[in-house]
Length: 304
Image (cartoon, rainbow, N blue to C red; front, side, top):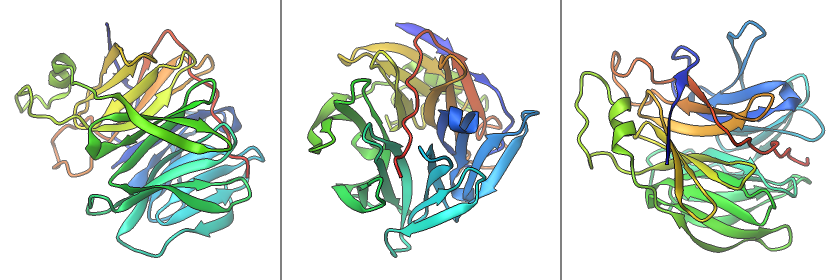
């Protein structure tokens, strides 16, 4: 098993960094400061650029026609290539529920899930937004819908409902959608990486941190990279479920990851400051990155 250490590449710009995505459509990396409602990118001189879209900006993906699809508090919005909002698609009115994470399937549809602000068990749903902008629920009784991504051949979809403490895998096809859910892997924390992410003012106690799979991405070999929230680490699992790599991150609230860079061999990792007192973990809310040997996949673009 390989051990890597991610490097901090920004100050603590975000309250709750999430949803990183690399796309040539916007010439690099985009991510969200979720509870600020901002989509974030870099300016040419590597400073943060914020685009405020709603009370929540849960995740962002490119559109084939240019622009972005953005999951906002209670639906999705489409922007044009200039960033102007082109269309808003509300999906519910319940103020206790918000969007959380999503990804684009090989058929160009956008799978995006919700969660309750109070993290109520079973209150969330995973939705499919079709390229014609119709939408429907595809998985109900979810608690915290999180990362979803597809295998290189498009036949498998990997998915996290965080409180289950496991990564699920579905069979997937354009005709049948998600089928035959089963456990792909139940991650076990790496104590060395967890201790490295612990605030210097505290001591790490093995077994104290629960395993909370958050965002994920799938590389060109079909291996699954999973951010483990609360543990300061990202794991890479081979298609057979074997743990291949552990990345130590210098902030415990590791939220999501993506592969990018010109050669798709840089793993970008978002972190969060949510619920942390001032002065605790000053590196939280930063972006991290580490070079890896296997490139990612080209980001799928929404077909609408």
